[in-house]
Image (cartoon, rainbow, N blue to C red; front, side):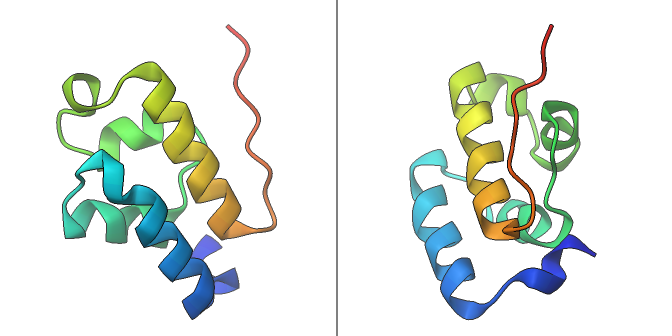
Length: 79
């Protein structure tokens, strides 16, 4: 599981960085446990993500998750 590389400091940083997005505790936990790497995965984890998050915010969430994971550097998908 991607969450194996996490430590208390990374988790605190993650929670602080996620404050502006108004996610539920369950959504934050899912992001921490599963460490999504693509926008489609975020849509599966965050209820009504299309309405709640702009495309820029979605990219920011993925970058924050990538920073927590540590061994993965998020790269925006080419369309």
